[in-house]
Image 1: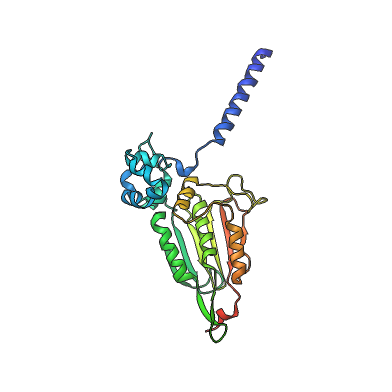
Image 2 (image 1 turned 45 degrees about the horizontal axis):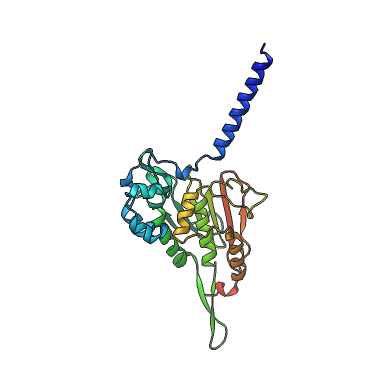
Length: 284
């Protein structure tokens, strides 16, 4: 049988371990900042980083005076791990030459169906599987040219207006959020499906951190903070926690029903956006 002193010592050591473990867990690095051990600097598009990202991420005057090598510069931005001498997963997803080699699920799958469900015939299928610096501009163009449908409608003899099936900026916001908040450790891609009457966007990974079904969309948290900051620097997101409100307003102004969010699943986050009901869109 333990003595009183031994029992107190055991309780003390157990409590110390519990506290240390809690602190360690609370400060655990997110996956995007962890080192991608199979990768090297050669797996990054270093020229594009130097020309298109560092001048935006760092003060131009400081960058001009910065004599550190590219590894040190990237490390200061959470994009390189000096201990293991390799890029982080954030760097691979943002600037990698072939991110799918290291993260098989890192791509966006677009499918346009001819009907209103997944049993319908497929009209078009496309995969966006480059790094984000290359993928996001292409996704922008595709959304504007192939998904958002526009129609000029006469308002008077001298004036006309343009009606849209979906507001470009609203759908773009939802797509960027899906890319930014996705779980990188799964083989599931971001799914972007267009049906005759709606759009569905589904990204792997449910609500993260402090965000819960009961406080969504008022509380936000970042599964991939390094990637999120880079997307802000590149001009694709704002990180003001106003995205959902802005999307709903844009949908309302365009004549679309409110977006429906499915936040109760642990492994996916989904949003459903109905097409505008403007009768002019139905005219040939």
